Image (tube, rainbow, N blue to C red):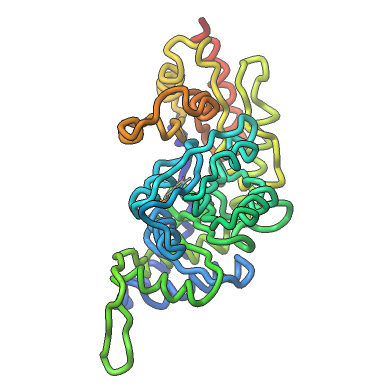
Length: 374
Ligand SMILES: Cc1ncc(COP(=O)(O)O)c(C=O)c1O
């Protein structure tokens, strides 16, 4: 039987033809397709200024630069995320401060957030893990009371709404990723939603070497910028994807419901929060009963692979990576994130999956857990 990956991008023939048109056009780097994608994303985000670039990591780094965050400043985030979320704080010379995750949502624990705020705290980077929205009402209540900037790491949550308000249409900075595994893709890429045209102008400058061009070939560079621009081929993929995003996310929602219906509850898995309103079902991640499985998570993943099912890990608790341990973090610092990070597995979930693929995953998972049971 065909190997079932945990995810797969869905690029239609019309989009492939449009990428070919870009390649033939003679203008392949940032150009009209980038502008068109920015306009489509801005419309999607309620008319707010949006600019694209070649990764969400770069988008969050630029958001920190726009907020004037640097050496001496602290930025609060969660260890239950991809390393990019905290790395960008270090890249701009500031210090990441972790707040543990909360067990049911697996997002930053808002009950513990205020205790981590110090006079040096300048910003919070919350993460909508697996696409499930962080409680925006509570988050912005805390941020506003302490006059903190917010850089929403919405890498995984395009199309998610919080209480009916689409992520990206409200709030401070919002960063989306268009990496190949995300709910919409440009192969690699991302965008930042900003508050006003002044921020967007500075973003454009920082995105491309800090240079401003004037009529008649004049130019100046007055700030140190990066090389973060997106190509028109990538933007053409994004234009094909954004048209289908709502349909993609609706299909993901149906597949998630099938998982909830079909997973055998007696296997001892801890399922994700069953909230179908505030998520885009970017991933479906049960926590494994690792203490009861021969070979633990590794044994489970290998056995699933042998039976033709791809399973991922997103993610181990970040503070336990060597780089962060060298900066003083250690096991026991964030017990909930460590619990989740040690047990989480990502099951296949992507729009082109068939209903009976879910059944196949559930049946295989059942057999594997029974065969590994200690
Ligand atoms: C939560 C989170 N933050 C940030 C990123 C970084 O996105 P990009 O790969 O586009 O830089 C990712 C990508 O996997 C992510 O999942």
